[in-house]
Amino acid sequence: MAAEEQTVKFGISADYYSKYIWRGQVLDNKSVFQPAVSASAYGFTGSLWGNMNLTNSDKIVPDNAGEFSEFDWTLDYSSAVPGVENLNFSTGVIYYRFPNQVFRPTTEIYGGLSLSVPLSPFIKLYHDIDEIDGSYVQFGVGHTFEKIYVVNDNCYCGLLLGASVGWGSKGYNHGYFGVDSAKLNDLTLTAGLPFCIDSWIIRPSINYATMLADDIRQATDKSDNLWFGVGISTSF
Image 1: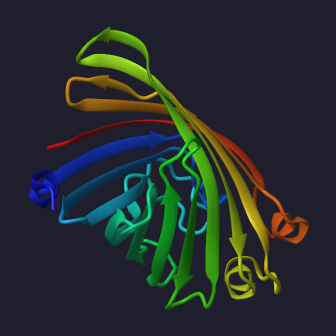
Image 2 (image 1 turned 180 degrees about the vertical axis):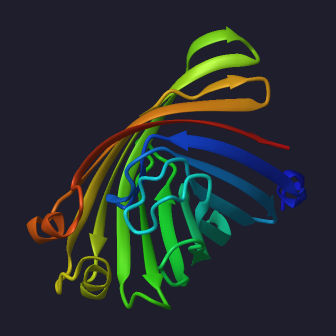
């Protein structure tokens, strides 16, 4: 194993978004703050991510500005598939907890494959083993145009484009939308303009998501969403 894979690496990030959209669903229609910390070694990554509502717009729990509405604990293992060129895999578990909310905690396990080829296609399956008896599958592609503008060796800018489609099983769609059939759920598009300043990465982005199936659209509060964000991250 390479020496750099054996060294513990830490990461921190902080993101602002004008909305909190998750798998096409509106979880908060106004501004949110999303910090995260992580530690990685030997292919394993453990992380803690949070969502803080910045306004009192939450319809389920109003008057919650400045409070965290979600914490996600994730343990991931990622590596190349042995003997198969350009094929990578990841597997892990996510524990979702919702402080200051009416939702019960839940847990998902997941596994995915990705190809290190043009457009970087990937597929990822999430299965809830707790509150929601169902699965969500995400198919996606993306590409980064590196260093489209260079100031110097320590300051440059890229362009990130991505698209994904989500599919929900009958149990997943019943649990989240009251729809008793498996269907395509959402289409999500993103464009980012990440730029580096020394060891820091600044990540402005614009995003769009739409729910695809008619009965799922009818079951969601807002089926088409455009939002923007900006984040900062570093690793050491």
